[in-house]
Length: 320
Image (tube, rainbow, N blue to C red):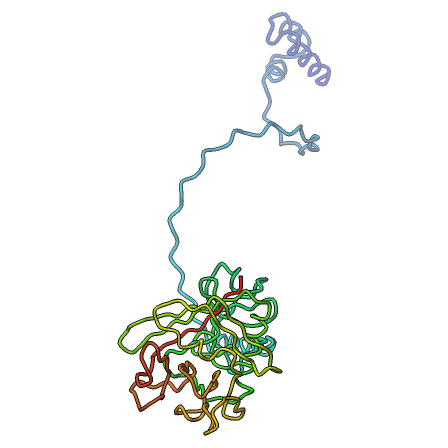
C-alpha cells in the first residue's frame, strides 16, 4: 500500500506540484502523515561516480599578440680571459710549425733580405704602380721607385762592398737597404736595349746631385759585363762616360788597363767597378765618413773630386 502511495505521490508532484486535487486523492487513500511525508523533498543523496570524459572539442582561434615586454637590465661584464701558460705554449708551437712548413723564398741576392716583397705579374718596375720590393715574373727580387729599378744603393756602410767576382755577378746585400742587384740581373734587364740610367748622389753636408744617361746596358758574363753608357745630362758632372766600354773588375778578376796593379784594390779596398786605369768614379768604394786620402771612399770626381767621399748613392735603370 505504501509503495502505491509513493508512486501516486511522485506522479502528482511531477504533473502538478502541490496541487490541491492531488492532495485530495492521496487523502482518500492514505493517512495525512503518509501524504505529508511523500510530498516533502528528501535529503540529498551521495554524489555518484564521474562519467567518462567526452571527446576533446575543436582548437579555438589563437588569441591576440600580447604587448612586447620592456628591455631588461644590462648584465654584468665578464672578466677577461688571460692566456695561460698552456695557451702560450700552444701558440709558440703553432708558430714554429708554420715556419717549418713555409718554404724559403727564392731570391738572387746572396744575403738574406728583410723586406716584404710583393709578388706580381709585372716584367719590370716600369709597369709597377707602387714603390718598394717586388718579385718580377722572372723571379728576380727588385726594388721599384717611380717606375725605376734600383740596382745599387749606398747609405750607411752596413753592407761590405769589398766582394769578389761571383758576389758581384750574383748580387748581395738587403733589398730595402744597401745592396747590389747583380751583374747577371742587370745584363738580363738591359739586353733588349732602350734603357736609361739615373744616378743620384748625396754628400755628408746634405747636398744632392744627379747624373742621367739616355742609353745604358751591361754585356754578358762572356764579355766580362762591359759597360755601355752614353747621353749624359744632369748637375753632378759626367764621371761615368770615361768608363764606357770597359769590362768589370774585382780583386780576383783584374780586367783594368793599368799595368801597375789592380785598380779594385788600389782605391782603399777591394771593390768591383768598370775600371780603366783606374777611373773617374767608384760608387762601390769603401763607405767612410771622413776623407782618408786620394781616391779613397765613394768617388764621383766631377762633383766632389777625389778627396771628398760621398755618403749616399742610388743607381737605377728604366727600360721603356
